[in-house]
Length: 256
Image 1 (cartoon, rainbow, N blue to C red):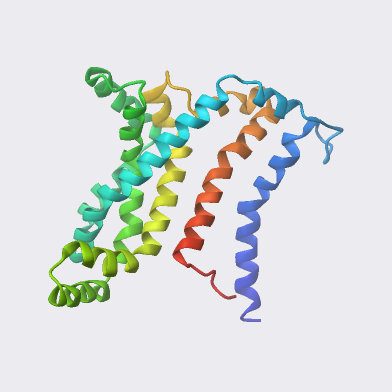
Image 2 (cartoon, rainbow, N blue to C red):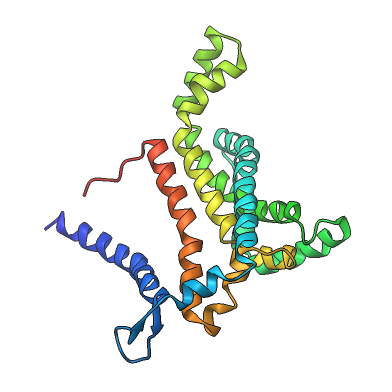
C-alpha cells in the first residue's frame, strides 16, 4: 500500500501533463471534429498541407533553431561563473531574487521594455536582438540548474587536481566538466526549450522576424487543426533535446 500511493500520485501527474498532448496528433489530422462528438467525423491532411504550403514556415523554423541554439550555448557560458559563485556563498534571498527576477515577470512585458532600448541600439527585429532578449530568461534557468552541481565534493576534487597539476584547462577537462556533465546537459536542453518556445520577447523584440511561436499563435482560435500541426512541430525539438540530454548525462529515472 505504501508503494502503491506514490505510484498513483505520479501516475496522476503524468496523466495531467501528457493527457493534453495526446489530443494533438488527433486534432492535427481531424478535418472535421464537431462538439460534442468524442472522435473526429473525418480525418485528412488539410492541416499538414496548409502548414507545408506556408512560405514562412522554413524561415521561422530556421530562425527559431538558430536563436535557441545560440541562446542555450551563451546562456550556459554566462550562467557558469554566476552559478559557481552562488554555490560558494551563503547568498541572501535578495541575491537569489534578483537572479531569478525575470522568471517572475510576464515575458511580453519584458519584451516590450527591451524593445524600447533595442530600437535605439539598432537591435530590434534582428536575430542578435532576439538572442540577447531570450538570454534574459535562459540565463536564470541555467543558473538554477548549474548551481547545485558545484558541490563541496567537486571543489575538493578540483583542489586536489590543482595540487597535482597547475594546468587550469586540464583540470577543467578532467575534473570539472565530467563532474558537471548532468547539469550542463540539462541546462543546455532547458535553455534551448525556453528560447525555442519564447513568444513574449520574440513578439516584443523581433516582431518583424519570422519565428515559430509567432507563426503558431494566430491559428489557435482561427484554425485549431493547423495550430495542432504547428504544436507538434514546436514540441518535437524540445522533447528531442531533453531525451538527448538525459542520455548524454546518464540520468536514470527513479525507481518506483
